[in-house]
Amino acid sequence: MKDVEKYYKETISAKPSKLLQKFWNMKLSEEIVPKTAIDLGCGAGNDTIFLLNQGFCVTAVDKERKVIDIIQNRLKDLSQLNFLIEDFEKVELHKTNLILANLSLFFCEPKYFHIFMKKIINNINKNGYFIR
View 1 (cartoon, rainbow, N blue to C red):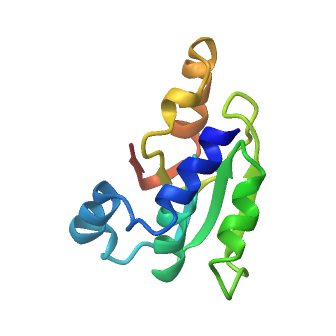
View 2 (cartoon, rainbow, N blue to C red):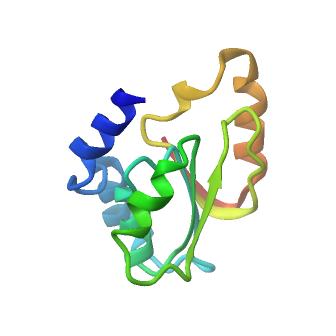
């Protein structure tokens, strides 16, 4: 638990991931309708907040309940944000246009990885995106 809290403290002021920023510059700035996203392993919420600021409705997924307080304390408007506090092995995803999994897929137990990947694939809308 201490390592998780240390990670949040060290990353809370970080910019969104370079991969998300690059993808935004290449593709996401095009009109995506509806603007829906799932951030797998949302951590301190940097990518979640970036997407919210771009007008997305975001589902932030993490196994640590602490992320709710961390992210909520960083936002004024929570109306476009949902949380799922669950392990990847048990999480139920919904259809969306973007799934983001920066440095988080390794948190899935190897014996469930193929099932989790099927969930991801089956919940990306046609012409949607998966950033990993």
